[in-house]
Amino acid sequence: MKNSGEPVGNGNDSLAEREILYRLDWHRNYPQSVQRVWTAISDQIEISAWMGYPTKLELRPGGLIHIDFSAQDSLEGTVCNIEPLRLLVYTWGDSLVKWELDLDTESTKLHLVHVGVRPELAAGLGAGWHAFLDQLEDHLGGGGRPARYRELKNRYEAELKP
Picture 1: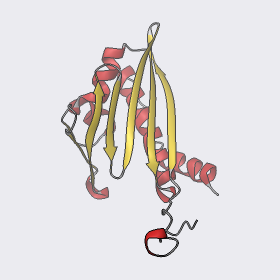
Picture 2: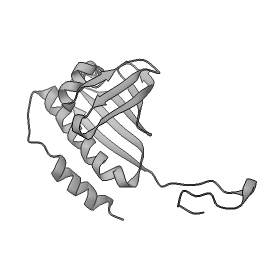
Picture 3: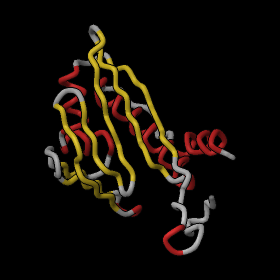
Picture 4: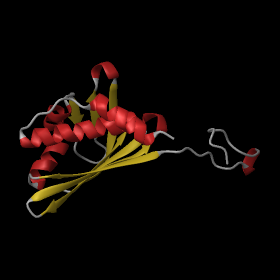
């Protein structure tokens, strides 16, 4: 099989095209309640506050998520699945983002998965989500830290180098 995006074979006997995609996973633990973390990831005002970009979110299957990254453009997706206090899944461009929450005694475990990431976007998206999760932690806990995107991008580029 080729990885060129071109069909292999002739006519009706051609093999499927293939493309290498990444799955990026993060695990975080927040000392806040599931309700508090859920609100932070599912309320458009809260998302706008910790992401730092205007966000619209229609919290229902088929609903729109739109994040206006201004100079970097904007991104739109569609809510695919929602289980309040537990699961939020939406498309992110041509990929998929899944937020899972789990109560762990007095804290909340968060598992963020970004599936279908193109290799050329993996370092930037990896660093971006990592930085956003730091910002979410600061938002929930009232802390603040310097922006780390550039530092994180260098780390992700080194880690994801073929």
